[in-house]
Each structure stands twice: as C-alpha cells, then as structure tokens.
Length: 311
Length: 244
Image (tube, rainbow over all chains, first blue to last red; front, side, top):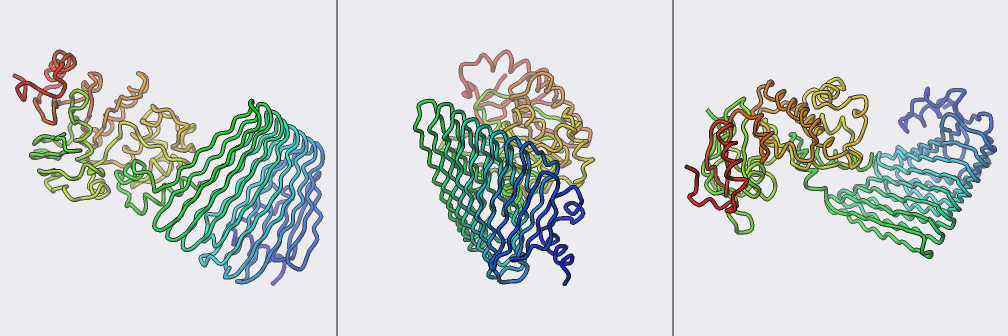
C-alpha cells in the first residue's frame, strides 16, 4: 500500500473528507502507528517530528503574532487490530498568536491497541489556542486511551479544548489534564464520552487559577449504557483575587451503568469564587415523555436525549 | 360524535380524588377550551389522556376515534395521533432544533423545519441551528414546542396553558399556530384559566373539583367563570356540585 493510500484510509476511517484537509492552505500532520505518513505546514507554523519505536514526538510552534486561518488538522491512527501508539507533543503558542487544531484519533479495527499522548502545552501572553480531539473507535472496544497533558496559560492567554469519544466503543480511557492559569487567562475544557458494553472511563481535569481574574470552566458530559462505568474527578483551585471557576458534570446512566462524579473546589483567596454542579441519573422523565408524546419509541427517545448531551 | 371521549373517568393521586367520574366528549376538528380555577384538575386530565407516568391508573374509559386508550403507553397514544403541549416545556442540552422539532414529523426536511418555525413567528435563519436548551426564553421554548407539534401533524392536541410565560406579541403567534392546527383538521383542547385563550375556542367546558360542571358556548362559560369562579372562595368545592 502506498503512503497516499494509507493517508486516504486513515482519513476515511476517521470520517474525514480528504478534500477538506489536503489543501495547500491547511496545515496537517498524519501519523500511522509510529510513521509520519503526511505533513504540511503553513507560514508561521513550525513542526518538527521525530519517529520513535513506539510512536512519535512532535514539537509544534506557532510564531509570535501569527494567526493561522484554517484549523491545523492532525490525524493519529492505528489501522491493524493490535498496536501501540505513543504521541509526545510539545506545543508552544508564542505571544499573541492564534491557532486551532482539529485532531482525529482513529482505531477502527482495534482489538488490543494502546494510544498514549503526553503533551506539554504552553500558551504565551495574549495567545489563543483551541484543540478539538475526536476519537473514532471500532465496535470491539479493544482500545486503551491514555491522554496526559500539562497546560500553562500565561497572562491573557486563552485555551479551549474539547475531547470527544462518541463513535464506536470506548474500551478504556484514562484522561488526565492539568492546567495552570495566570492572570486574566481563560480556560474551557469539555469532555464528551459515550460508553457501553464494559467500557471504563476515568476523567481527571485539574485547573489551578493562580492569577488574578483567571477564569475556567471544566465540563464533562458522559452517557453510560449496559455495563459501562465512569469516574470523573474535576478539580479547580483558586488562589487569586477575581478568579472564577465552574465545574460541571452531567452523566446519564442507562442499564447497569455505573457513574461517579467527584468535583473538588478549593478557594484560597476571599476574592475568588468557584462553583460546581453534578447531575447523575437516568434520562430526565419530562424530556423523555415529551419525545414519547411526539411518537418516538422509548429507545429512540433515549438515543436522541443522549445524542443531545454528547453533541 | 366525539373523537376523544372520556367516560366516568376517576383518578386519585396521593389518596385524594383529582378527577371525579368525569364524562366528556371532544368533537373532531373543533377547538375546545377546558376552563377552571387552579387545582380544578385540568392539567391532571390532560396528563391522564396522554397517559403520562403517574396518571395512568384511572377508572373509567378514555377512547380516541372509538378505540380505548387505557393501557397504551405515551408513544402508542402519540402514534395514534394524540399529543400534548406542556405548560412548561422541557429543555434539552445540546439537542438541535431540527432534531427536536422534526422528531415526530413524517417530513424531516429542512424546508419543513423552516416552515413550522415561521408559523410560530420564529425566524428560521436565527433559530434553525440553535439547541433546544436553557439559552431559550420561556416564550421561545413554548413556540418551539408548538412548532414541533405542527410538524407532527397530529389528529388531536392537548395544549396546557398555552399562554403561560408568553408576552402579548408572542401570544398572537401561538393563536396563529392554533388556527393552523385547526386548518389541518386537528382537534384542539385548550387548558386554561385565561379569558384571552378561552376566546380562541368554539366550545367550552367548565371544570371544578375534578368534574365538568357546565359546557356550552364560550361566551356563556366565560362570563360565568369571570363573574363567579374567579371570585369564588370555595375553591374547587362547588356547593351544589354544579351551576344553575
């Protein structure tokens, strides 16, 4: 199989139209197992990749003041049934830069695949960085996903991230993100995961609001069916005047699903304010009966409500 | 002949009788109003007709197009053509307008979505791609509820307090939607204690203490309700079990 064929197959397995991401104006990095099979950069973006026995290490820099117009596309995948992919990322957004990354992680045939990510992300003063990670898994649930990230937001930096795993079986996920927020920085972190079968989901998101008027929202929306289980440990600490934070966890449980949410808020300054909200339970009866009264079956109504929660 | 008939329907909730041997016929294709003071049992009656959880354990019989509804689930009743517009509609985090409004529609095209949004006075360009969530005001959510009912093309609609949470300008759109439902041949049952809503009906039923205590032209029932019921200090305890 040629490299081009492999790129096509990887993108197709992730549900991505190649024409959307292979243009000259779209920066990209495509990695299959431990091989870079496609890459392209645009002005102001520097990418240095090192192939390793178990994956790759990439340093990505967006230069000072550069605004990258179209989202950078990354695609990481393992197409065989078994494998290990370890992605090490060092992402640096220089002062007043602006970029978004859309990352697809695809393991459509996995029976025994481990996908690890270790990321160090630095967003310099006044820079904006958006990172959206969408996972596409197969029906077997044979994937273990272990994303780890340490994020540093400098003054007036903004970081928004979404982690989505709603297509295919989760398998196992153990997500652990830690963010340090300087003054006037803004963090939005959202995880949306749908589990079924015997999927196991663990989410740990921690944010330290160290600077004045730093703000953060940590949100987790989880749907569990059959025997799936989830534990969500979201923590915000606030230690500066004007710091504001909110932790929000919503979990819908169907069948024998098991859900646990542990929001932790810690405030060390009288001028800081952090709130939390957790809602775990079955589908809301009023939502359900509304859709039933439109003629949907109970299964279809539950699917639609869960689709909304995870959308 | 009634398209929706209730015969001697009784329902107790928490040991208290809420519907007391209620018998009523709603005629096909007409707009009916069920008026009465708070606590008369109007919403309970709507919930019992729709078969909502907690309101299904009735005595007596409810028939729709001559067939008994007792024992049928909410979705089975809906698939026969019956639906309910809630007094306070539910909000759905993340659920798109198209998914919600067209959930029960046969025609699931964007054109249909835009048509029913326009029928309730909401600009399709502004609303088609929004979510049915807490960012909507109470009035917007109410009109979206009606849009979903218009899209469903039901045979009969129970509308519980259609004016609650609605400003005067939006109320006109609610009434337009109501007329559209009637024009499509639907039977509409308005549950209300508002004179403005009552005036939209062709026939009215006065309800008190879980019973229908009078029925007739809107003007007559409305006048009695305004003069006697609003001022009545025997709330839901009619002295003679009816009016003269």
